[in-house]
Length: 459
Image (tube, rainbow, N blue to C red; front, top):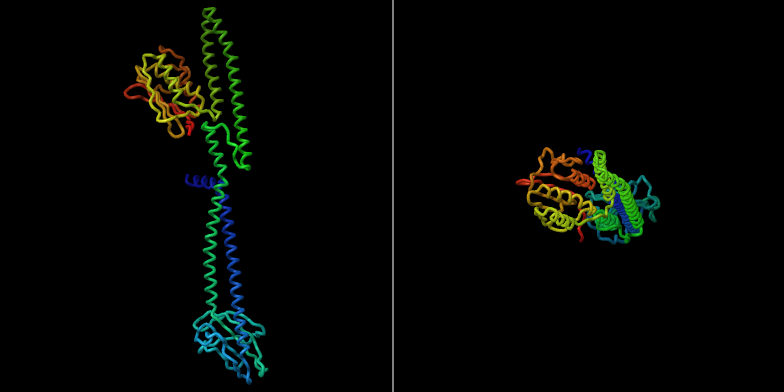
């Protein structure tokens, strides 16, 4: 069961247009930001390292420029290097001049350490590399082979090395700024995507709300103020509603024609049977009455089946109940009819004629069996309305309650009636998707609860 629920939830998410749009937007945004951030970081790193190498090359050329050879293996300097960090021990700024089988000349900053050049590999052009210096410093160094004037036989390896922690800190700082900036930009873009999708799907939500108002009977058509991309859909749905209403109207007309065509011959048969009394006329009259009731019953069902397809039908319940109670009070003058307050307007999603037929049969049945009073109430509960008809009569035994809904079934043959009233109510209630329940009323009597679909109240 849990697996089926998970599959259903996953399928629902996969069908969500909102989820698809947001997912695509988020994935593309993250991909673009990550790729852009990587390229920016790579470009900045390359720029910083190129500038650092240019700086190393400038210092290397400065070192070469101040150096001179006075004899083989002897080097003198016109002046010291301009930056004082070459004089501070282990400052991270170092220079060294090395030659094969010769003592190396070093900056004072190297103190008792030295750089280890690879003299076996020629460096006719400036060569850049990474190295480990004193106190495990990470160095970036530039080196080049130079032959000084006055000593054509000795090739000197000039080396400049600087601690690269300076540029590493710059790169780390830039990466942190880049991460936070792109993260904030990504959140902003995702928020903008959420807002864009929310606003973009708003017309669809408006269509949903408009259809709900049509279903509850508040409106008859969708409005014509949707965006141009959505309006054709709204127009087609309005055309479908109009077509549905036309079909229902044609069905009603055909039902009326059929009723007229059947009732006229039946009326003739009944009249003729009354004019010529006898055994045969009695049988004809009885069967004609049965046929008329059956025709009325099935024509009513056909009419209601057509009317329930009209989703714009809407009836005020209080007014209909009040009218029925006034009529019943005139017919049953010995009974007292009471209308209980509804606590607000209640509307039935259907036609008034059908509501009056259902409730009228219930109230008439209650008045027929009540000792002295009938109480009618209605209220709304969620998407339904609850109508209760209570009498203080003898009630109905639980064992035979289902039998009263059988067409033509009568529990008391001495009481006038056709046995069709509650059957009609049950059929109409079922066609509207409602429910009818018979219950005991305390201390005695019957309580009938009718549940029908509710329509929206006027705002």
